[in-house]
Image 1: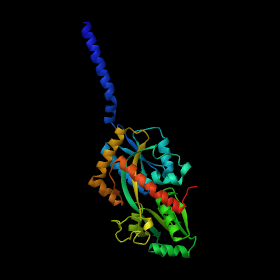
Image 2 (image 1 turned 45 degrees about the horizontal axis):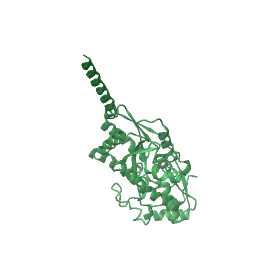
Image 3 (image 1 turned 90 degrees about the horizontal axis):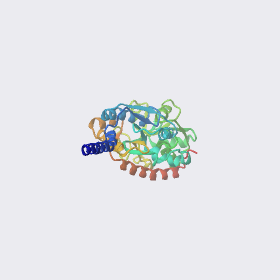
Image 4 (image 1 turned 180 degrees about the vertical axis):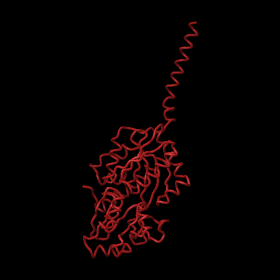
Length: 329
């Protein structure tokens, strides 16, 4: 009787031990167990918002959970990022970023940044990319980048451009353009791509250099004129528009990419499960076509690919910032 009892106790102990060991595995296997949240660190209407909302809809279907999108713009995405990293940890909370928050803000805001992109964020993967386009109001007689330079030199201090914020690619490219051409132009920053575009449409500024997604509808409708795209070759949606290099300004050549991140200490199992789901989506014909409609190309890959791409952008934009003298101080 004693032997049987001892054996029973031993078996029970072993089973309890095994159940304890498998609990984390079962917990990860059930992830996601509730709706997810996706933060967009820009105001509604811009490229990051356009991408984020399409991503939320389809990625939610892939994960079989709804994804709630929230916008929190300002400080070139910095306000949203700071809110994200300071929120209580949640493995169901994610954020779409452009490389601006990872590779440009650290040089523009320096001690005022408020977050460390290397330790406060967990990279999951790149999502998509798009070039910038230089566009002007229909109210001024400009049809090329050379015309823009000539107009600026003949109207010193009267040529103003909008941007998504201090340190955005549009801001930095135009400051580089300014330093290379000697044109006297005024920078007016806004809280995101959408408001920056509206400023040009309303006549508050004369031109804008920004990502294509939110500008394509206005270009196609004839409300603004595209002068050049910043991609290495002509863009598939604007085949008649020259590249910046073709227009004589190779220093403006660049593309903007967007990625998905989680909070610090996101479990590796969750990171990899989210990356796998993201890549399945990015390789699907339907989602690829959906993004092409808004001038975005998918960029599937690993978290390590995103880290490597960030390093490349940091090296590039550090030099641009030094040359242009751009600062948020």
